[in-house]
Image 1 (cartoon, rainbow, N blue to C red):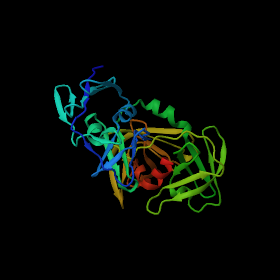
Image 2 (cartoon, helix red, strand yellow):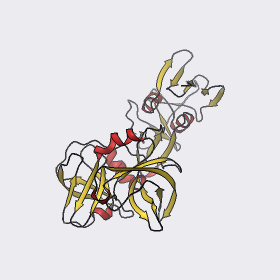
Image 3 (tube, rainbow, N blue to C red):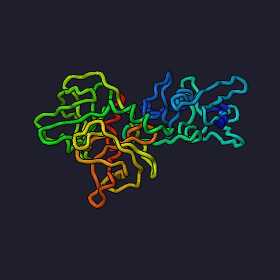
Length: 322
């Protein structure tokens, strides 16, 4: 496969950072970034130690002492960050690092958005939780996404309904639709291994058809990676749930567009669902949950509608960060 080289050269005329009142969070490919030097928010821009971000995106990193530079590469591309001349080199192109890196507590921090987007990643910011999201989409085979996640999808039973859900943390927490679990006498969850557990409601969104339920007794589970970045039109998506109480069911399709619904845009796709699919997971082509399968269009039974996962916003981010 063709490899490109990205070199990051460290600019010498760095300036001293004045940190904001609270350090921001950074999530890379759905996972909270942990570094020995915290990210800094300055004048609306997030600055980070570069190596942990690059490695979390799947790149290999090599440091060059003199002149100061970082070579970044994977099986598909490579770059060079020239820190002496404050430039990103990609092929024959020289891209200025703007804004310039900063020094904070003796560490060199680089602008997250500029460097990440130069490497082809998507960056977004959620102000409510002071979190930056970085996603480098690498398309995975559908079979790999399904095999990786079938065990993380559950079937939910109440005295009123049957639906689906998926683990969002490592202690059995589940995301589903509010209409699946609203006002029940009891909630029972059956997992991939046919184990049944009692659950209770933790959070019902006041604005959207989304709920978070927790087990009465915590247990070890595997959380599904979630993406707060939207899916793209024509992107392959996979819906996994329990339509018509048929557990471990999956369908594939394409994103056809978005439907404005109040404060959000529902994700429309040809990944078919049915009653009982509600609360299931809609995966993007990188294997991240981007939506909660929720409905079928009344005027087109072949199109399913999913609520984008970012609607959980601050509530989910606080749970993930803790």
